[in-house]
Image (cartoon, rainbow, N blue to C red):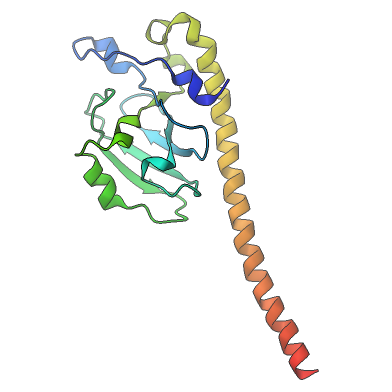
Length: 182
């Protein structure tokens, strides 16, 4: 089952219902390719935060892991503007923070795709996500581990590419130097 297939059910948010304040929000209408993984701290249990690079925050060909802090005093709901601060742990490229913060107050379509997925199994209630979806949540948890591994592999691959370049250039210069004096 694809990761985002698990997230297809939209939750209805009712601010008068205290239980609704604990409902996980979900990411939908996105592709499975080039997902960016974020570590997340929020007023809800820690979870997996996915962002599709075509939405505009990151370059399509880059993948990174960052931390996101969400305002703990805000009840986050689908379609609501999010108050986020981003701390990059491994910045391989620039994030246009000015554009990001400006976008919080506009109707950019990608903003409406930012939704939270809760992975803490104890916090997932069958009445919230539907009894039939419980195995899907477990599947999501397993896929999260695979996604973490994928990101680590991509970072290692990028590091190896940079290392290869820094090793090859001096080698070429040494060979040219030997050839020149030969």
